[in-house]
Length: 324
Image (tube, rainbow, N blue to C red):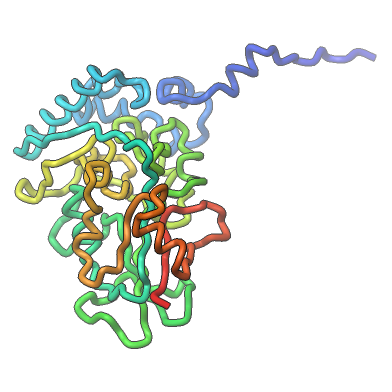
C-alpha cells in the first residue's frame, strides 16, 4: 500500500508565516491572502488614493512612525503643512508631540455632576479638526453623551439623540463615552498593519498615514470610540485649529479611522483636554496616574469608581465616579 509523501514545513517557512505584519507585506500579500472584495479594497486603499490624487508617492513609501528619523519626520510634517495650505487655505503648525517621562494619563468623570449639555462634544470637534457640516453636527465627535434612566446602566436603552437644550431631565442621568485608552486595548491587537498602538504614557494613537481603513479596530472597540472618515473632511477655513500634532488633531484624510487621544497636542504640552476646559459643572478630572498628589489619583483613592464594561477586561484609563 503506497502513501503520498507528507509536505514538511521548513523552519524558514514558519518564520515567514508568523513574522510581524507591516503595511508593505500586507499590501504585497493582500490579493493572495485576503478573502473578499472588501478586504482587498482596504488593502489597496493607499494605491487608490495615489491614483485619485489624494496621496503622493512619498505618502505611499513612508516608513512606519516608529522607524522614522527626526529628519524624515520634519520632511513629513512640512509636506502635511503644505497639503493643508493647498486644500484649506490655512497653514498649520504640526508638531510631533512625544510622550513625557514619568507620565501615565488618566481621566475620570463625575456622573453626579454631568448635565448632558454636550459642550464637551462640541469642544472636541473644534479642537481636533473633525469633519462637520455645521456647528451642531456632532456625529464625528469622539464623545458620545448618553442619556440614561436613573438607577440603570444598560447602554442598550440609552438615548444619544436627546435634546441638549432640555437638560437635565428628571429621572435621567448623563454618561459621556469616549476612548478609554485601555491597557488591554483590543483595537490595537486586531490592526493588520500596526497603524494603531499604545504609547508609553498610555495613549492609544493612530498613524493616519499608515491606516488602510479596514475598520477592524472599530469592530473590536467595546466603547464605539472610533470614527471612520467616509469622505474628505468637511471643515471651513475659519474653523481650522492650526495648532496640530502628527498623531492627533491634524486634518485626517478620507478613508481612515480616527479617535480621541486625550488631546495629546495639549496634554503633552501641560494643558488640559479641550473637553475638560469647557465643562460648566466641573464633572471632568484629568491628570497623571503616576503622581500620588494628582487630582486623578485622589479620585481613584477616595471615590466610588465605576468602570464601563469592566467584564470585557480592557483595563481602561477612563473612570466614572459619584460624589457619594
